[in-house]
Length: 468
Image 1 (tube, rainbow, N blue to C red):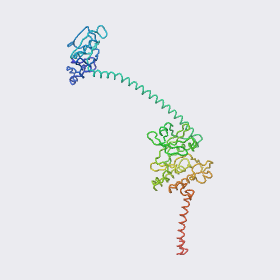
Image 2 (image 1 turned 180 degrees about the horizontal axis):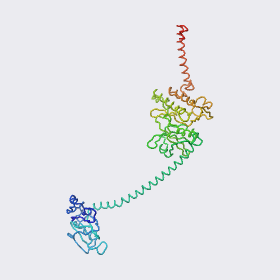
Image 3 (image 1 turned 60 degrees about the vertical axis):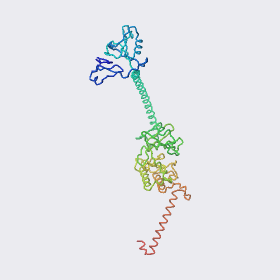
Image 4 (image 1 turned 90 degrees about the horizontal axis):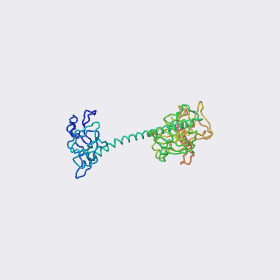
């Protein structure tokens, strides 16, 4: 029915009852697809036998009716192991089996088939048939068996490892969230305690110290943008490749706890295109950090006081910077819900974005005026001399006029390209004195020209003509 080396299985769910024994394929696959299997099967790999040596082996086919006894040799006195050896020694032997299985176990006696086998089919309580195959075919079968066993085991182990990793990750994530929540609550309490704004609608972006360490490559010197009395500023990458500037306040920083509160709370409340944007903050032990938007052109002083870079500032650009600073001050003084006096306005606190738009920064010294308050006094004068108004520097009195004075000094520096200290001109104590002298000189020249013009008119015409 199934031909040479065919195997019949009448209990299969398929409509094809015939298949080839292991290591064999249909002689004519097209006919087999049409259920014409009489052509039988042929070996996939030829046997390796000759000159008294062989590398062949046997594959057991279990639970079958033994093939027809044509082309068989029977020896009832041989053991199954002897039968195997005899079959290997005979290059024509294609299979062997026990001749008598009534005694149980592997049976006794030997029956060997030569050339081919036919009429093999699965039956209940069938015998074992040992089919001769080439070594390479047996190796591939062993690999298949090993694969069927090993792959499920490996897959199960990987699933267990993945589950364990997921649980550990979930546990750590929850622990990190709890830690962040605790730090955030502590930070909010720290920032809102004794602050003028209290905790009214306060939304504070919080960044963990671990994320900041990662973003700055553990505060690498290669990422440092600058430093001052308050500490150091680093460039970092947060989230999805977002560039930020991170101000790390040192323990010996000139910017104390109150200044830190001011900066965080004020910038969180104020939103304007000419004010630097706060992206986050962090308090971890003695560490206090502020995260700002990154502005690639750094501060204004790096342009106007640099001999090479000041050439990049043409007059339209300088005018745009002046207008931007004035808009930011107008917002702080009049247009925001709060009246804010910056108190430390200077070129190093004016940052420039990629398009040279100015942004006012560093609100640590800022003060809030409420209600009808227009000025205040302090015994602690802070800021930078040269940019302070005289009444603030001498008497501690400050108001929005103090910022206006500082803006005027910055305006002169932008126009002239000179620092307020004016160290390179020894005849003048500062830039203001120099500007006063220049202004007085031009005023005198202008007055002289007008007087000469009036004198000439008077010498030509009458007094009435002069009046006209």
